[in-house]
Amino acid sequence: MLLRIDDLARRYGPSTVFSHVSLQLDRGEFVALLGESGVGKSTLLNCIAGLDRPDGGRIVLAGTDLATLDEDACARLRRRHVGFVFQAFHVLPHLPVAENVALPLWLAGEPRMSALQRAGEALAAVGLAGFDARWPAELSGGQLQRVAIARAVVHAPQLILADEPTGNLDPGTAAVVLDVLRRQVKEAGAACLLVTHSEAAAALADRTLRLTPTGIVAGTAASTPAASPSAAPGG
Image (tube, rainbow, N blue to C red; front, top):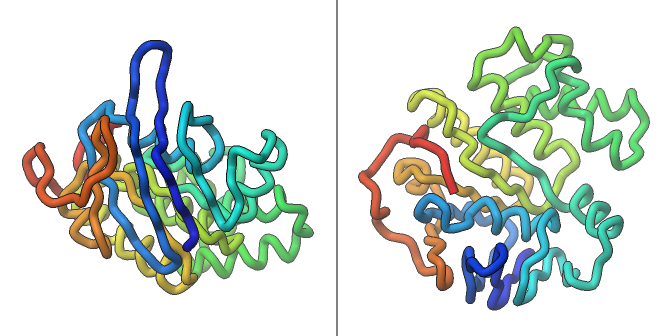
């Protein structure tokens, strides 16, 4: 088991965001997480990554209980085991594409040239061979999200956390990007937790879960109308 969450709770002041959240995720799984806006889906991802601390419960990632780690140790675990894909891409405009992708490797101490070589291989894997020297401003939204996927997988993490990665894309581009993400996760033997509002995006997952204020339940239909993979972001 790659990820285990037991009875997790998060509060902001007197307000409870969620409680009694339990989840298990195995290597090779592509799991979609649905939920109402404001229910704390992004907050849950931040807790899993050690960027936010829960107020109760337990998170065990790759055999390590996050509660036993200080901030530096948590950052090292995150750099080694976790890759991120966000709705807003978070591609740095002042760096060429290959250098954006190589960032996780440099943070882990890998030499510049070998990191750039691996970045080029990751770009080729997402269909962007030859884009190494391009600047982010020269790319479309769909291409930028592919760059973000390449950056997320370049250091071979065990867990990919994807937060509304198609929220800024048109339906056709969103479908292509989700297919690329799913393929990269499967080929790497990693796991992915995909936060989405989109029923179409969730339909691509191995299983679907729904986050509620009082825990996680098996997901079926969303309470909002069925939408394309680029449904509006939130939560």
